[in-house]
Image 1 (cartoon, rainbow, N blue to C red):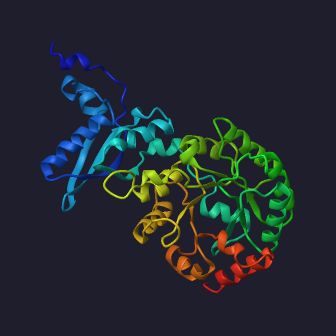
Image 2 (image 1 turned 30 degrees about the vertical axis):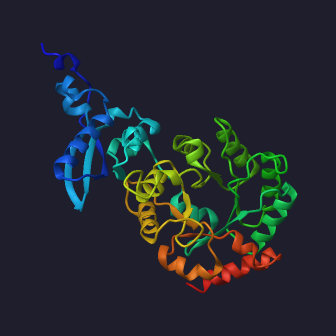
Image 3 (image 1 turned 120 degrees about the vertical axis):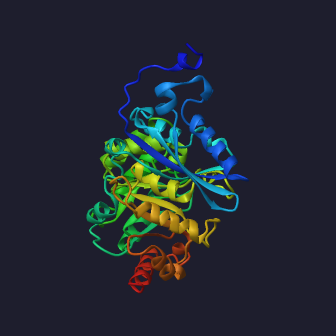
Length: 377
């Protein structure tokens, strides 16, 4: 018996496979082929391939299904994986897609495809675009959203602000992502005050439930009990699996905030494509609304990258519901028409600081926001 065959054993594999597409920077097709083969081992057994045989070599190790040129020095590789590698866990699915590969400077995850079995395991957005529209009673047109700011206000001040914004017609009023459990606005006191202030207005409050460990799930449950109509969380800080869990268990619409995710989409050859990270993986983890920076704001996302996100949130993907894009990051009322044209009708307008620049009468400012959006219809 050879050394290689000692690492072969009968395995209960179904033959069901899922896949991912990668971009590989390489000087030649031969170099790209070697990189793709190395990736197939790195993302699965992380073990000398020559020491394996039989079903481990043929089915457990990822298969390079396709490799083709995509431009000078750039290749795309399609790898498929046995569904048994995941074990039904989102953390392991993300690990298979891009675990050790995230450390490679020449490999970028472009998009993913689920098998039928995996798609059944991960239900995705509970509400999605259609469900959130029904919940808010807004059957068509963009939704209007803003954040409670600035940091340092008391629960009473934040609640008063929320009430005035709701009276002006804002649909989704969320915490600023930096509002956590600070002494000036403790989470539970803020939650109770703002939820009570919005009763009967038709507006939905999304408190920020991002917190350490199981406290995230605890705060999401508190939000539901207090009558908040949604929750906001930063999966880059708490984990995509944590967001997916309370999307299933708590039952409120989920707004995903991009804090800490910017490093996953660096300029250059590595990282994760915007289509996959802000589109597919967010839907996979149950986000109904995905916040990200629109081009021309405070951050460096390009027009092409924003278009990728919009497509990744709305295009068919494993039967999962499409989710709302919520472009933000320094948007202004003067750009409403441009943003509307870029993203289409299924859009959450997220304007924060510029809404407050309209003056101290927040109800009037919210109504100007409404008029600006209606003017683009």
